[in-house]
Length: 251
Image (cartoon, rainbow, N blue to C red):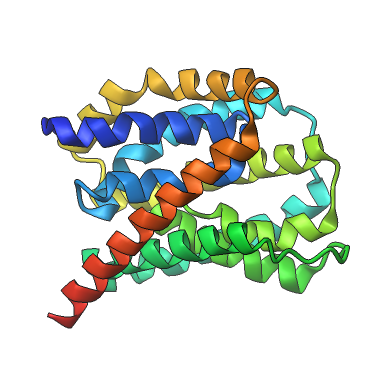
């Protein structure tokens, strides 16, 4: 398994943060996890180590939100996500570590700026097969590469202004299916080698702890202040990855 202590210094909070987001404590926080781990190991290795942990988290999340989801939306966004995963799988050989770092950096910085500027459309929109398929596909692609499928999916889902538990349940079921499907291409691409799997095994106890911690903190902690700290950190990490990715590609 990975033995670098610095990796676990980054991986432990990354797993807990992802689990807390699955537990409903600010879903957007999960975008921090891969950038944090990518500071120490190659981005796709970080994603490979995380994926089995996400599957464990998804099982807990599905149970928590059982019966709470928009089936009409899932019928549209899931086929789109499968298309996005397929495109990402076929293009995997062309995605270098530096290009993935650049992609993560763009997502991290853009997501942070969007949060700070708070430029959110208040216009309510209904279900759309065209928009749902497009944003579902983009979500599947970014989820495959860096487990950051929430931002693009949110662009489609949030304007619908669904009831909170329905929205969170739809997210939970969507990403559970997506992550289970991702196991197939990750395995075929050789990402589940002994090093990554042993590392995942060491970290797996943190997965349900993170989810339960998210449920516990949801109504007990100042979420706004937590968001401010995490998004500032995400912005700094994103800039760092942008610089490393761009420098690597140029050279």
